[in-house]
Image 1 (tube, each protein chain N blue to C red):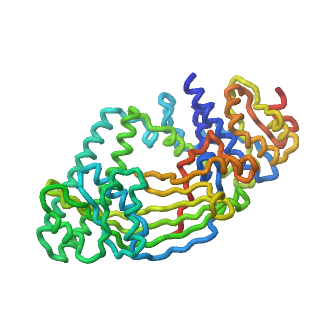
Image 2: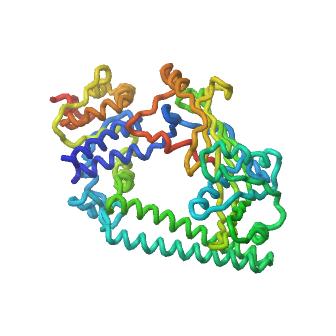
Image 3: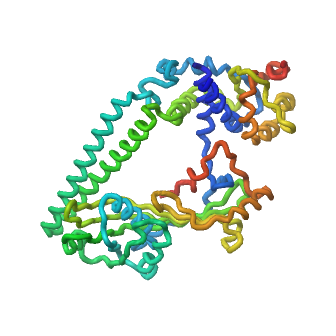
Length: 236
Length: 226
């Protein structure tokens, strides 16, 4: 009995340590730059896509109306959604400027057949953070752009009308060595896509080269889940 | 036998644990068994199941879990139905004041739904495992015991070496990083190098049977005696 508890206690010691890792290297991220900036609408509707994808699992809809105080970037951003392998991303997305309320829009579209999903974004801000990896003598860096805000969604489904209010969080992460230029990029990823971190680009051979030169610290295979940690929590 | 193998696998974490403690200049050996027995949670330990009673690590009968899942599922359906009625009422009303109130209520229901769905996921996951909580639940409790028993022992800044339980084998011995060198040199860097080979050491633990014990009061460690 004691042997079991003893082993568990020892295991708990390890679990108390905080580590951040990518798929191959073990990083010890230190925050070196941080800014929180209010924005009228998220630049890229990843969290909104997550809401639409979740709703699509329960009920079908033909298109998505994304409502917010749009700028040029956010207005064209939905055009890039089909890059993500998600059923909701392949639906037509249209950016609508805030005007009539979401409920009023739902009322106008309340009719038999597959109506739209109306998704509104407000109270948005972005957090820009730059981390440096202490394990690589601060040579490896991670740039994070995190979008947060309130998301309200209404589905004027004639069978079961539906609405949801949630706090949406999405982020883009670029990990590079010394400079964020081609040839020095380790990985580029986004969250959430199907509720997970989605790797857009990974240069494993470059990571292996840095590991073999002992510039990066290799992740121990046995003890760290490579996808469990992305970066430390950002300040409020 | 299987339980012993699990224990040995978990013990491999030991090699990652020690660096936390490598900061002092003096050495002590501590009888963990005695320390553990002092902790009140140990009274809840059930040797038959290997779990702590009345904690998240406790094994739950499948029938109880099925009832819980059914109850939470029904509550989720009620919440969704309530939201549906709210949306329909707001669309029919057309008043701005009603809309604000509707969103406030929807927000409240969604927060409740988030809790329920998280609970449902936990219960379903437990049900899939036939009511046996994962080792992480045991680790949570072990972590608490560790913080309340072992940490105070290291509060003085002393380096603490663990006396491992006895299993049939010889001490881990690696080509360049023999742990015993550390006992002689008392050099933290040697231990760190040794521990850096965590993977290899973990594989060797199944062949380890002697306690790794060091005491500053004694010139010879138990490991060296053999």
